[in-house]
Image: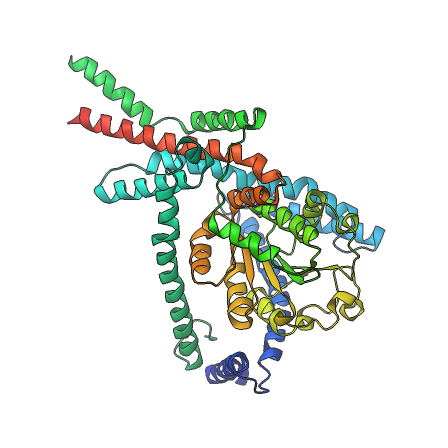
Amino acid sequence: MSLFQRREIVVVLTTAVAVAVIADYWTTLPVYGGTFMEWAVILGAFAMGLAGFSTIRYHIGHALKKTKGLWVFSVWWMIVLAITVLTGLAGLALTFKAEDNPIYIWILNNVYAPLNIAEYGLTGFFTISASYRLLRARTKSSLVFMLVALLVMLGSIAISEAIWSQLPVPGQWISSVPGAAGERGATIAMGIGSVIFALRAMTGRERGYLPE
Amino acid sequence: MAEKEKEAQDIWTRILNIDVRVFYWACLIILALPLIFPFTLPIVVTEPTRAAFNTIQSLPEGSLVLYYMECGVGGWPELMGSMVASLKHIYAKRLKFVIVNIGYSVDHKLTFDRIFSLAGHPSARGYKYGEDWAYFGFASGMETAMASLAKNFRSVYREDDFGTSIDQLPIMRNVNEAKDFKLVLCFNTAGGQSWVRAHWTVANKVPSIIAVIGAGLAQSQSDFKAGMNSGFWFSTRGAAEYEGLLKAPGISSARMSALDTMQLVTILCVIAANFAFQMSKRRKK
């Protein structure tokens, strides 16, 4: 096995970098944790390129295999990608401006933005339809769930305040007291989980990220 | 009698299994009404919005604010109102600001243009680029980038979005870490608020105000109660409250009527569905 693929090397590197970043956060020692973070920012840019590459590979795979129900969308995705990249490059060649050339901006303003907002807006319709079909008092617990949902919704609209000034109070109390308490519990659990994950990674017990 | 009961049972079942297309058309028509005939209802200002207002209001003129957009076009319906209202407040208080975008590589420019088209361009408000405000555009790296910004701004951005070196911008003179900023405004659709909380507010004691979409309410409430943010704007509602405090009604106040109607329709739908469900259950018994 190559030296660079040895698990021990990866674990030692992970531990060294993690210790440096943690020490940098908690102490003023010159441990170069900040340098590793700068590297991570640069690696993040590479990761975006890698994500683009793997997405293209994914869609080419479906297009070539003619995966049922998917290949048409994969082909369409690649056509749209090609149009965006080519027009963007044409704009760059004509105006010497990278991402703010007029052709690219036109596509963003007139295709991307309206579609993105429309997609977001459609969730409102789905939410109403889903609420109608799913928020039903079938059991005692679903009754409680439904009442809480209704009270929270009443707590966030101005109409309820116009009807009676105290009408939104229960909903606002639910979101600010039990809701915040639940969220706090989840946040603390996530924090502890992150620490455990980091410890497992540093001691080589977490194997998900290691080379096979 | 039995036939009549069966017929009635059919009605309840039919109501419960109403075609989804009928639903969507009804929603579209109902939603269009407040847009055609807008109405305004008084909005009670909630504690987090008032706290956000007081925090910005208390900053002395010329204080430097980090205006952090972690939001793309998809976040406009819920966050654009607070982005515009807070910028109007920044203008009114003559605060300096630096815009960064971490998280949305494609559409940060659209968001930037849209905010200025609604709140007014800084130059029209007497702001000079480089001295009173600066725009640094997109940087990759997500949470790591946010943490690095707090430690060493120049490790993430060496030049602004227009290609000018950071050292040639007078606003960035002697500014390189979180402590050089008086406030962070975070317009958040995903993880931004927890990054600001961890690396700016908790670690460096820089106050922060967060604008959140509906799904982020619980976390913002929890952080606000724990003093980990100095206030927040809850979606369109929070922005409409803020516009009220600024006495400058804007897009959020206008949208509230449509939003209220939609929420009311949802509530009525749930009540109607449950009534039909109980009736159908009773008939079956």
